[in-house]
Amino acid sequence: MKRLPPRRVAAMVIFPLLVAALVVPVIVWHAELWKIFGSVRRIRTWIEGWGAVAPLVFMGVQAIQVIVFAIPGEVVQIAGGYLFGGWVGILLSLSGILLGSTVAFFLSRWLGRPFVAAVVPRAQLERMEKLLESRSSQIVFFLLFLIPGVPKDILCYLAGLTPMSLLFFLGISTLGRLPGIVGSSIIGGAARSSRWVALAMLSVAAILLFAAGLIFRPRLQALIEKVAQKKPPAGS
Image (cartoon, rainbow, N blue to C red; front, side):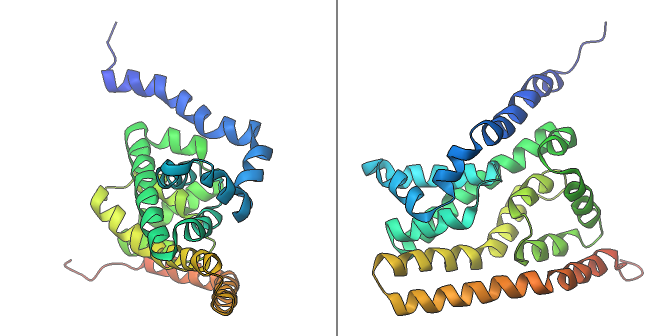
């Protein structure tokens, strides 16, 4: 009887455990998770309760919300800005998101497409795969991170299925996420220091940008699909 490679055996064991770890909590404790992560105030209160280790807990929460992508990231980022101030909140959010993105990237790279197909909705997986399989996949990947409403945490899993390196993935995904992280954290920081005029202006700007992203998202996605289908110059 042919022996399976150790990596294959490990994947066969770890695969269902990781799928369960990602999916079961969302199904079983969805109400409890929503109570905490659905409100800036509630998640802020929960993190504050950890005292001196609150910054580390916040970073861990940021990492988890990337890995368990059903958790809304913007709420966590605003809470971070409120708890730690705008700039410290940005640094902590970036650190946690980089950690979570790295874990998601290596999970999909090690366990392969069956794992990603088990945790990512089929329609989203197939559509994103077509875009990322193009010759312009690196440009497409960056553009997808810029569009509001595109599931960026899912892209972390898809990136692991592509040939791109971890460093390239982290660099390009961080650039794409940065505007949203900075905006959300500064909104939280403005609320912390009771700068209500700045808070109102930032909130209105964020709402307008998000609305514009939703309105123009079909056109932006169509543009990205054209970039994906574009053939490289002859001789390249």
